[in-house]
Each structure stands twice: as structure tokens, then as C-alpha cells.
Amino acid sequence: MKLAKQIFNFYLDASIHVAVSVFCLLEITAVLLNININQNLAYFCFFSTIACYNFIKYGVEAEKYILVANRYFKNIQVLSFLAMGCAVYFAFFLHKDVWFCIGALGLFTGLYALPVLPKAKNLRSFGALKIFMVAIVWAGVTVLLPVLSANMSVTTDVWIETFQRFLIVLILLMPFEIRDLAYDSPSLKTIPQRFGIIHTKLASGIVVLIFFFTTYLKNTITPLDLIAKGILFLSFGFLVLYTQGKQGKYFASFWVEAFPIFWYVVIYAINYLLGNFFL
Image 1 (cartoon, rainbow, N blue to C red):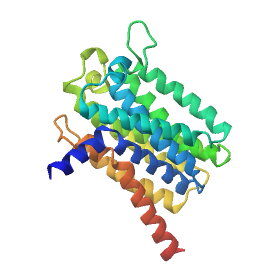
Image 2: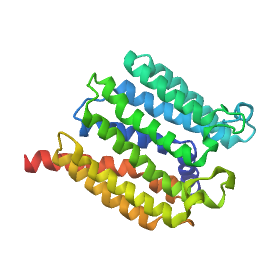
Image 3: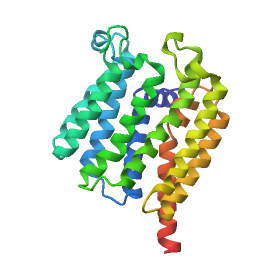
Image 4: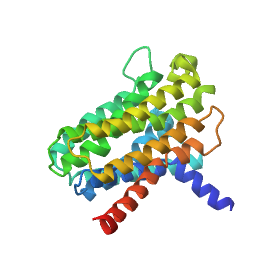
């Protein structure tokens, strides 16, 4: 039991759980937009997520990231370097248009993690700004990259799907922001610090409504898209309702980050039912 818990904690701490969620969002994009995912892109996103997230979490100070004394974090470091090597390998098989988009998203990630301003270590130091930057990167990686990789035109429906993915990430970040309220420095001025937990949850509820109803702005609305977004809409409602400042150890780090995995399973189940019983 102790070994299983250690493996599970490593799975979370080493950002593997986040990478699985990114992989699931890529597959969701393929289903909703009816495109084929380039597996080289899928593997690139999976491994680069592990490497980038671990660098942001543990390696903002490069010296501390290279000279690691703790065995547990050294294992995470080794995994991160292996993941980066795998990401570079799969990147060689990607189309040049995908590379341009990766470069732009990589720039956003660099601005988020690296010191670029004299009075702040990085843009991550701006609490209210950081969640929007994270959401932009996730939306770009999980929607625009697979679309470009499939040589598909970036239509109005693609932009709406990208915007909805941006909103999804904003919603999923709110429990983390509320959880960290007791630990964040007041100088960060995060959204919960500025407006309090109640108003943050109200704002999240409004974002949930916008997320669902923007589906009707699409030129092509499929039953799968509408049902899948409806289920996620209801799930987000419960998430906003039950998110508290005092959370269980795994509430945000596992359950909230598992939402894309849950949505992936739901979409494939709905797609199977629609394809076999209603068409």
C-alpha cells in the first residue's frame, strides 16, 4: 500500500497526470473536429508537457534544477530530461506550420517561467495574468496544433473551439487559485486575493455559462458536440459549487486535473452510442 501511494504521488508530482490530460484533450479535438491526430504530435505534446511543467514547477531557478540533492526530485529531474529528449525526437517529424505555432506557444511559456521584467521574476509573478497565459498555451496546444498538423483550415468553428478550450482551462485553474489563497504572497494579487472566494466562484459560474452557450455560435453543431459540452457544463457547475478554500490533498492535483480524462471517456462513450444506436 505504501509503495502504491509513492508511485501515485510520483505520478502527480512528475506531471504525468497533467500530460495524460493534455493527451486526452488532443484526442477530444480530433473527435469534435473530425480530424486525424498526428501521433508524432500527440507524443510530442505528452512528453513536452512533462518536461515543461516540471521545469516550471521545480526549475525556474536553473542552478537548483541542475544541482539536485534530494533523491525524489532527482528522479523527477531524470524523467524530465528523458521526456525532453523524446519530445525533441518526435518534433522532427512535425510539419513546419506546426513548428511556427509551437514556437509562438513556447515563447508564451518562456515569458511565463523565465525572468523578463526587472521588478518581477517572471510573468508568473502576476497572479491575475498567469492563468490567462496558461489557458492560452493549453488552448493553442490542444486545438490549434492538431488542426495545423492535419492541414485543416482554421475556420470560425476552430476559433470557437479554441476559445472554449481557453475557458475550460480558466475554469479548471480556479480551484488551484482558491486552494493557494492561504499560501500565495499578497503581492501576487491573484483573482481570489482581489475579489475573494465567493466572487471568484461567481465569476467562474459566468465563465461556465459562456463556455456552453458559445457552442451555438458554431456554423456546424453536431449532437456529439452539444451533448459532450452539456455534460461538461453540468460537471463544471458542481465543481464551482463544491470548490472550497480548504481542500483535500488530491482534490485539485488529481480530481480537477482529471476532468479532461473524464471528458475523454464521456465523449468516446457518447460517440459510440450515437454511432451504433442512433445513426
